[in-house]
Length: 168
Picture (spheres, rainbow, N blue to C red):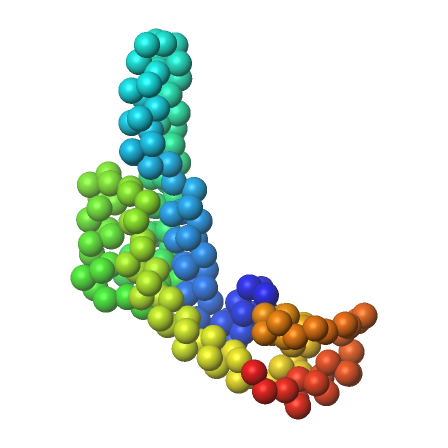
C-alpha cells in the first residue's frame, strides 16, 4: 500500500514527504530512551562488567542516533538538501540547532513530521481521486481497508471496471 502511495507521490513530485515521514517514524521508534537506559544503568551498578557493557551500548546507540539524525538532516532538512521538505524556517533551524548541539532525542523530528503529515493528507486525498484503473491493486487495498470482502485471483480487467465504477 505504501509503495502505491509513494509511486503516486513521485508523479505528484513530492516523494520526499513520504520518505521523510517514514524515516522520522523509524528514527523515533528505534530510539532507546534515556529513562530506560538510566534505570538499567542504576540497576547494573552492582555488577561492574555488566555496567561497563551497558555504557558501551549507550555510546554505540548514541553514535547510531547521531548518524541517523545527521543523515535525515542532510537529506531533508538543510536548505540545500537533495530532497528538502517544505517546513517553516524556524522549524528547520530548531532541528539543525539540536543536532549541532549533539542532542538527538526521540522527538527530534516529531514537529516536522506532523507538518509533513498535513501535506501528505492533501496528497492522499488526490491519490484517492486518481484514476484507479492505473493501479488495480489499489482497489484491492482500498476495499480491504473499508472492510469489504473481495475475492480476486489476479488483477485484470474486472478490477479496472470495478475501479471506474467505485466510489471511495
